[in-house]
Length: 262
Image (cartoon, rainbow, N blue to C red):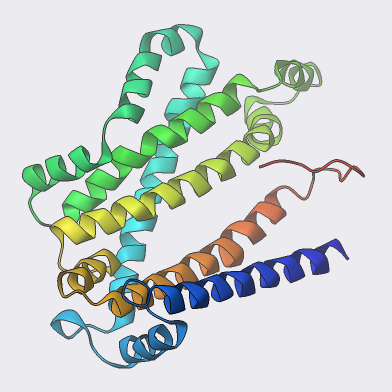
């Protein structure tokens, strides 16, 4: 019943958004294209080649490719560094100021710097996006490592568990919620930086198509590309991340009246 209720509330919120969009387009037609116009433009985008003769799925794929390669790098580096900081007092004391400085470094400056260093090439994006996103993963995993229950590790050793068993069956399950928080943070920040890199440095990808539409003052095309990319993100979230999260946390007991947080 709760699942049905959540689905109904989600549908209601989407319908509410469409109503607000329609009202806004009627009140401010010069700055907000109508739903019908965007749907019509969406049909054009999905059926005809765009910039340099590429279809829409080419641009979406290139953007997705950069996001997910960067995501793998961010999670690998951020998890190792974050867990190291959370489990070593001297390392935490020595390097924590650098992590906070890394977090504060302006993303736009990073994009400009990688553009100067590596040119207007995809390599700039593959390096720039992880530079911006990795510290957020470090921060999440750092907090997760600091909250590990040391008593469980001691208990596993008392019962003769090997280091590998302790790591896989005691430490990893405790870090899973923080890992999925890191995935969502990295994905939400990473796609914004990816679009920025594509808009400023590249000639392919959804970000480039946004910039191209902006340069030609094609607001309807910008909204249509936004719809394409939002659908892609919803598919990733509810088709990949949510099922994987449910699978990896199905061992957690459900307690009536308690709602686990993510």
